[in-house]
Length: 286
Length: 291
Image 1 (cartoon, chains in turn purple, blue):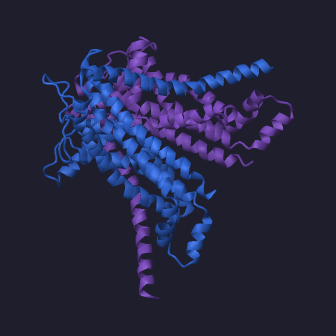
Image 2: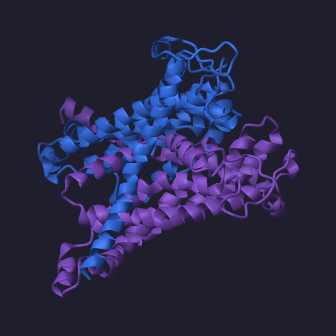
């Protein structure tokens, strides 16, 4: 074996280990972090923590209002964003395909997906909070977050519809079905798995967002649980941010405990999404 | 029947139109508020003054310190994430068993799903104290720690998109290289990576854009002191942090302080919009080269 070949083999082997190290690096960091959070926060989680109002004394403070706020935001955002997102996705994939308008829409959506979330906050502040006089309300927050996650739902819908083969759509047309009948009864059911995965990921993104809600004026301290979409609100990430910003050690522990709750929600939603994606990909073999 | 179909098509089209309205809304809001801001502050001062003190008595409106803070944290993040992300992409594509690749990718993507406020906590409570144990001059708030944690957040963005780009290269290229007696390492870096350059560049640009717009990590861990510096050890302030700082305070609508967040916002928008457009252009231009 020549010298050059030997060196190349060594390089090859070395990179194998470097690559493995880098791949595991991210996962190890994530693990260290999760363990750190668990050690700091798990002891703080009890019924009182889940059911108490915010307080200036860390040991008495709880996440009730923030948790209820997050549930409200989740439901309202889902109600607003899902139908609009799916409809827009269907339109782009099935109707306006080759027109210049469709081209414009496509460039626009790819651009929207890249706009920082805090800019959506500025949009929400001016349009929903000020001009539409919704104030710092749940509905203003949900509308802002809906606009933020629309691109994700639209792209997921389009990708899912793309995987439905032309042949079964044409079979449906051949049976005399109209375009909408075909979409509703053939295309959408076949694409449902992919669409659902996208929706869950999008909603999970929305409930983890902090920056746009700070800008539209979501509060860190809300002494009551919101009862209607017009009420002022806090959400878990806001509460966590508020606790992190305080110097007392007790609040850092509270923040860790609230992070455990938020991560549990996020990871469960992502887990469901990955599971659905795998199952959907396996099940459908046209 | 025909009418029903038309009505449905119209309704679906209307939903798609909301995305256009969102863009128009963003541009309109940023331009209107920034326009009144630039009625009071000269655009030359905004671009050249080296101090940003709109909340003080002696007001200066130079955006440079905020831009410097933003670019510094972004630079640290990308410098950290690029080699790791690219190595992961090559490793998963060239070396890893398909089963390993399939398991590891969703776990890596979990890194991108963690809410950013959580990363902020990580930066402030874990990474900064850790770095302080061997970097004596490191302040409690600094761009180094925020940048590194942001890097961890964008690793999956780079690795995932770059791996997709490598995966899209036709197998024949790889096999030709093996046939010539090349090792996997040579094949990866002399054949595959050059062939996937456009996709890799797109992933890096998107990562940069993401880092520039990232808010919570820097708002929590990098400080709130606008400062024109390249020193990663001291507190700084990014454009996004400034918007958060003002939003948390009680600033009356229509005041110059209120308008500064839109001036800051439009600066941020121009940065990310340019980067996103470039990446979109590259993607469209080079996409179908091998198909």
